[in-house]
Image 1 (cartoon, rainbow, N blue to C red):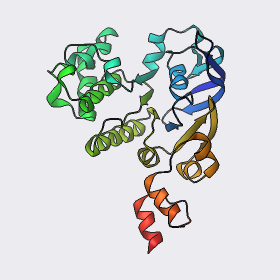
Image 2 (image 1 turned 180 degrees about the vertical axis):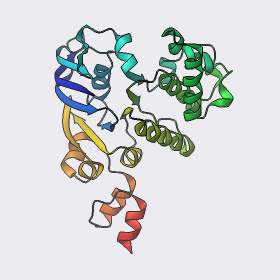
Image 3 (image 1 turned 90 degrees about the vertical axis):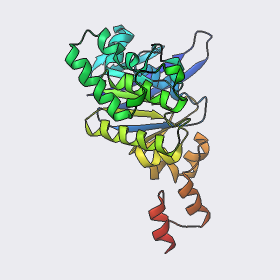
Length: 264
């Protein structure tokens, strides 16, 4: 059970090549972050995983099935995608209607729709916003409405595009809880993010991209404490790692408790 990209390249109609010869396997239940500067090909790559983009060359497999001849609707039931901007996704008149739209489209029994809705609402903590028009809901909360709508489809893999953008500390804590819970249940979570502190804290595996391809695949310590990778991907070390580096401390420090111990 995995998402597999095999020798995948993607070019836009104008001829611009966004990804070149990607090879990547993401196992079901993994938590993976994809990092790199704007233009590195991150969003294009994840859209290949759920059918929003189709390879110009190569093949994409979801749980062993080549998606070449599968509809975007079929793929999206397996691989859910939450857009960076919720306004690109939400179109119903209430938050509740947005969450229930796809389960109803799938013609699921009423009891199953309620179960999925309750679970999605509980995970995202948006109970008091259900009867509101999403456009009247604060942007940060609106992002959780979009996440809840995809969680309600119960995909095997969930893609989050810049989930922490516009979030405060409480929002980030909610995101951490969602990612942890979904991972525990066996859902693969794939996030694109420029928030390196969030990435280091929540994703055991990190993919660094640059020049339209993957340049590194490893743990947070392997990625963020490798000067060449950080420089080539044009990313920043997490804040604690930056402090440790400036203090000349060794040990690939990433977290405050590690910094405190090293200083002592």
